[in-house]
Image (cartoon, rainbow, N blue to C red):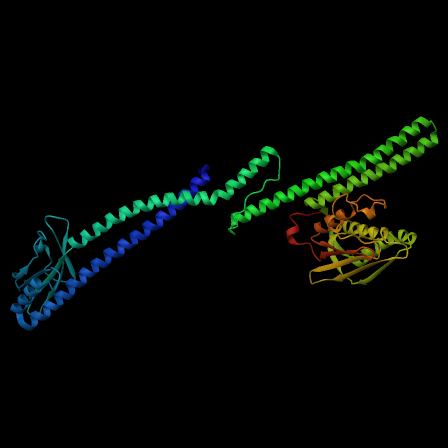
Length: 467
């Protein structure tokens, strides 16, 4: 059963379009038929009056009368009204087919110009008459009653009315069937939505009919949205579990440190405990601030201070920042292929991106290894910044998950960190309209490539707010 005003409107719209099209077609057909029949009758009387005029000119009135009587008896022509008027408008000859009724032929004009009509005195038909004046002043008139034509058109109208009634029924039935078929995906979509609202479960999916139409695309998009929502919910749960785990450990350590300091009564131990607590609180705040930054970047609410950023100079700043760390770990850093290119973006956010990539590269590179940075124009609109290392690499089964928040692979758990660095890198790069590519092989190092547009795309201006 079709419910709601949308289904009713669609049904009546379809039925109205179908019925209206049929009615217009029928009216046009009727008009063309009536016009064709009228034109045929006119051509008949005009051609006949010319023929009779030729006969009169050749053999006079007797020849004309004989020709008319022979044609009428032999059925060579359709039944016609024929009248010959003398110079004084007296009727020299007249024949009227039986059953035509009484036509007021005296109402016909004396001056024969074109076609004229004589109305019937006992019915609604008219006598359509063509006249011709001959050389001697004689007038020949040939006419045909419209009664046969009107009878044919009347039958046609009766048939059309019956057909139109059937068309209306078919149109309404077709509208209901069409609407039911059209709204079936929408009804299924509404049913799935009601189920999700009622139960809170997002594992239901809208059936796809595989017809390739827009409603199928809507169903696929809705299912893809549910998949995305499910993945986000799963990710949020995992993130909350990881955050709870990462917060529980420092909080427990924090509490234990404070309890021991209070129990000792030693002022020096208490000051040291306070310092440890401050260090742990800074770590927790850094994790929460990073999570907030990632969320702002992913939702498009992060404010970007747009300016022209020279990438080689920015990379040198980041390398200077990590020079002591690299030296302590005996890892060499080099900047190769530093093309003089600039991009439009937020200098501080891009610095965080490259700092995180460089920090990871140094952290997971063994002593004696190397880290290489490069800048190059990838195309007329994009620039690529690559951070490559000769470190431990990333297993292939972990590559898809390295961008997840708080995810830390088995090999990275020995290193101190929050597990948010690569999530922040991806979020900030996407906020700039770019992307991050990675290739890695265990034992042979990793290669991260940040692809950025030279200018922020116009479509991002509505998502990324510029300060």
